[in-house]
Image (tube, rainbow, N blue to C red; front, side, top):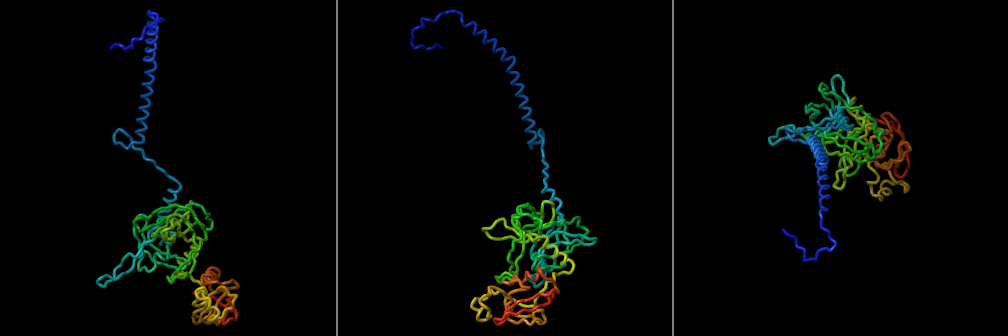
Length: 399
């Protein structure tokens, strides 16, 4: 194929000759050097890269035959804690007798929760759970971490603390949980919750969170009348606590029990707010339930209601209270032979102070009696009757 030169005239300065020979020789020599030295190095490097790539592929490959399968054993502080503590957390089944279509009694599971093995002796093992988990049970069964099931005996239960103690045959129990201190907890400290959310099919579920708050008070309405009967003091955590987790363990990073999981705020707009009974609050109750089957609390022997449940107009017209009274509890009835009856208290008396401490409602009165007083102690009661301020000293009896 010829070149088309557009008929340009030849360059008058161009000289003809053999000047192309020298560049040709230099090109041949450079090409030989490239083939001899450079290309073998490139090929060798490529082989090594391919070999390394094959090794890397073998490390991460799951192909059968020519490549290896690599598995990683990841062990952390949390996995170690969970491994040690999980065998001490059990499932608790509330079994109640029900009448079937043929009017015959048959046992049926009314609900499930969790429990924690906290003690073992030569014969028995002892489990703490929530009162609301076993409430109304005709029988109680405990499922261990190995899926074996044991019959449990209820030793005692307490409404106000929401705690109950069970006893089972200890021959199959290998370990118990270590008790920690809830008073030593710090806000922001990591904690782990172990339990059985949504039933035994998710037994031994583990969630992690932090201590979101301490000494939270949550109103409790036991008789469902819309008025709080008690205020539970709890630990707040964002570790997931769902139905079935009740009675399970809240543990610190030393694997110690610091709380008994109890409840959560169940609202659509709320997430990550769960509550646990502090172990320092629970421990004396657990001991008393184990030994006596009940918690003995002092009482006055009166049926009382908070003043804020009465219209303000009745404070002056019916109860004849002075204008400076801002709160208290009014007596609806007095139990015969009770400390209040012996002190001469009557219906529609209004209690405003115990031992000089102002009382604004029923919860405040119960806190003084249950947390500051013991059975047999004396207490000074300040109350109003028909506008007159009176005082009486009572010796507290067991409720």
